[in-house]
Image (cartoon, rainbow, N blue to C red):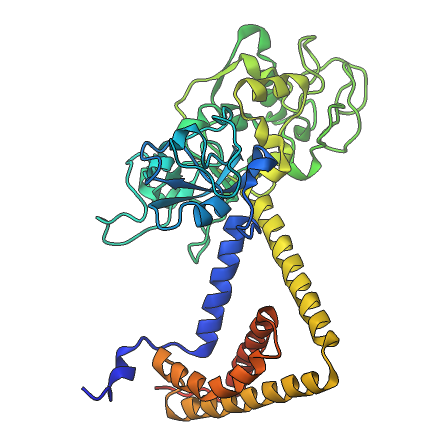
Length: 452
């Protein structure tokens, strides 16, 4: 074959689509890695609040160890690696006693074991209640999975324990309308969330609020029934805190106006005794006005879909704090624990890194002599002219770019580029390539669209 039809065998994409795909992949990787460049083992940072973790089934087939990004790249290159996305309160295991004679190439002096690390079946490469791997080699189509913000396991939509996947809060385009998800098993630990108002639930999806309260702590039931009556004795906001109005302090505050509500003072500010303060057992600092340690669920757990900033609504009175500690869910009060916060910090690190690179490259350019500067700028213009001619040709013919046609254009610029390499550092060259790519994208968008 003379290769006449080789171009047609290649997948075709526009340069705009290609650049968008590259940018999307880079951003996705940065969000998962949290801005970690993978150069240093994170062991010295201790049990990190959240970081990307990997499991090496080549070294630890039992799935009882996890390694950081740097170790997955440097120490376990070529091994069977399972990407676990992120885990909370985890310390890198690479090279400890679980790896036998294998040692960490980056940070070999580690403790025998990280006793605070926790592991689930994800470390063996299985997920969900079905225990299937991801990607699933037996599945006709790979579907996205949902991660529980408590146990951090991943679940298929059809295995969430819902009657229908239509119960999952999504918009018209199928995008999730919830910020965090709690699986059916973990919802039994978080039954107390059913006592909060509907503001914490995504799209108003609130599980049944049936709970069993001990006889001497039946105040919440009286409060709810009073506040929901046709002529309530007090403002319903006293019993149903809103996310935006909750004060994250130990001092007692009314939910309606943010003013302190002392024991014996009703919602209107008077000292009369009413349903809001009828019991001396009432915890005045508790937003729920009940000791949740004595509360137990009656109905089985159901999956929970939480709205944005729902964690800010959680009560922080002494009893609730004690309950969180007992159930080992105190991390819910830590802002940096959530995936949303982790990704936000990753975006900030990404921006800072790009700014630092730009500053370093500009500094490098400014240190060059006049002749070198002129030569580089001239070379950039020549490359742009060559790329422009290539894009005009592609636009005139079929507007689509394929790998072999791009390669031919690249070879025509190699001679000039090799001369520029003598003058430029690698980082500066990367910036140059990015600039040319952006230029080509802008140029292509300026051309009239054509159909194939």
